[in-house]
Image (cartoon, helix red, strand yellow):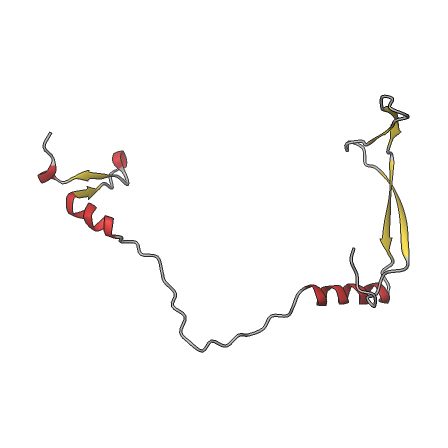
Length: 122
């Protein structure tokens, strides 16, 4: 963790020993000696957590971290009008389709185009 020289650091910690829950994946411990095959030494049955003590020094450190990590939001005034372009549902190729075809709405051919009667010559 990179920190500034004058930034506060938690100096007191609490060590908490917990037994691993049954049914979880166990972690094995292996060792090797001078190019030999790895040998199984045992299983991890307990885990130890190093937690900071929640005191005023720790809370000040966290507050300093959160304030420096994210700049506050600022309002930016606009001097000109911003053009927002909305999507167009009727494009140029739809104008051509409407001239030569009919849009089907019946369930058998729903959302499909078919030629108009005057263009059907089989």
